[in-house]
Length: 631
Image 1 (tube, rainbow, N blue to C red):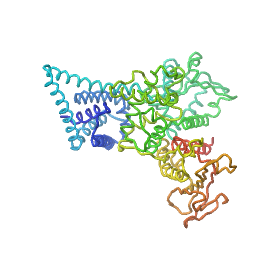
Image 2: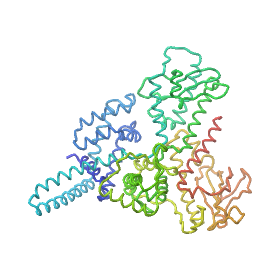
Image 3: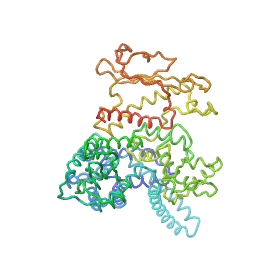
Image 4: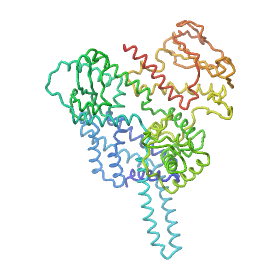
């Protein structure tokens, strides 16, 4: 018997019905096995790293082929399908057919052997399956004794059970297909790809022609592609999937002006880097065609600098729109609790300090889409929603329109539908202004969650009962709670920030790392238990924060952050000290690099402090980097 068929197939079936209790050890061991598969594949073929594995395994045709294998383990048929898809994704210049065969055979061998040699998983699966069969048999036998047609009904029951299992698998797939979290970047890329297809079919290739402008255009494209292949490869990763180089299609070229569109040249396509577009095509692509503004054509007079300006513009946009791929567990803890605290009624959850991953998956993938469906189906509520006016449905907006009685009524209906497997029939695109729902789905599908069954709250939460009538967000925490939250925040933040830089800007990690020109950060907090508008003293109207950046005279000094509370702790530094003055702390000599503050301490009271702070710091560091680049 193929153990992977039993293990993977049975576990997928178990996830269908949220009322079934899956033994925790099955869940734990299953993810360990998947980790082992990825490690083994990475070890056997270093070129096929975890990113490539994830890309390959998430392709729809690959998932379909593996599902067919799990139903009927014919390795040769599945292998043929996977090899075809493998070379649709990866070039034969990177992987030979021998590489592909080795990788894919290793996939089957490792997953079978890992589950086979894991008696804990195998025994639990067999025991749990046997228990389910015994319970079903007992029910069918009871039916048989109670009626003369018992055997016929029993047989019918078995058939119905089989149908329900198949239906359940289909339902869970349909939910995933119908539920989407709005992604502005995804919409932009989709529109761009449509325009690229029009461009590809209608532009004129400039084969064997010689023009004076080609020299400057080549200089511009060379510099642009150097940036996209090195320091700012994240731009290509986010906007130009499977892109080898960027090319340019232009409508007119003169010393005074150029109208053009940049387009990606796919790794798997032999295409030109310079094309020409007609006036008609320019008008058809007008939303995506750029025209230089000013008295000079920047590609003609400063091609390299203009390439840099375009890259800087795109990186700035990524930071402003918060588009970076993030998978850090600390960020997930912050985001999940920020969303649940504010939208728990849409998710069918109670506000608490800990949730299991299973609870979170169920709330986002099962409860939320049915809740939205129920609200939209309720004719007694004036929602003011129409799909033509918004690219997504905002659960927060729907929640705001419901009174407590309606919320309770909808909750009952949603739970009833879940019990009866009555899922929504409409396609839903969900999004919010304040919370990155797309980020939640990315986290939930990320392998970084494999080692976690439970997610605990990161910060001490707000207590709204402290000052029920106050409109200050900082009134809902005591000064000590504010201090503790800042400590928690900065204990996690440098690692979260550096991990983001390592993944998104690996070539710039020295320039952008958290401790880039200092090794000690002193933070001073001034917070109170009560705030008032009547006092003119700024510190009594809001909490304050100061930053002191220091560099130790001794080499190899440990990088650290020291946090102090004003009017309580002895603070070894003050703002009267001169810039670049020497200061001794705990017997060590430091040079002061920079002061910041005192300013209002607001970020720790936001819904997503680390998420927002990360982008603010990255934007600031990027601006400094662009200055050094000569912008």
